[in-house]
Image (tube, rainbow, N blue to C red):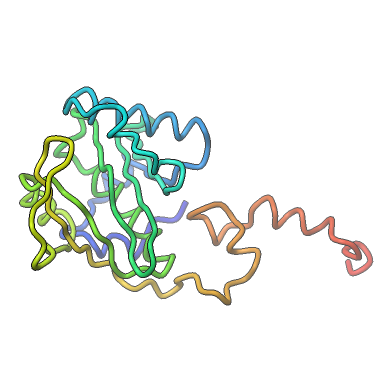
Length: 208
């Protein structure tokens, strides 16, 4: 799979070559992927932060895009994206304890930002624990939303941030090729199973 070119530009620091060799990140596409994502989040938010189940799994997971981070094939991180008119929302970033402070998080974010940019979005909103603002402000290009007061949920103080997403030169548009936009999420440039099914179209053999 090709490396993202636009997503890394949203980060504050480049990703070293060895990080790309060790880590991989991709959208959740299967039930098995979904279970891996849920396991990572349960380990981080429920076990470490004592977040109640009903608050962590809040009813938005089946209507969102999730990413998984792998360290040599082992799931170690995840995040969630929800889509709104004109902006996307970055949520539920979770990395297992042994991976914190390493480069995997940058790979995860770069791949996620690539997908967001490819969909044509230029802005994201995030709700971060206030104590982690110094960390996130050094991780990706963002700012605290002016005029927005702190707020609380699940026993933590939160702040709202705006994340700046670079423009993608090949953003998907309304006029995109019909086969392109029915391909699996994030692999729009690779012919998929439905491309192959077009060979069964009436008249295909005659045309060939």
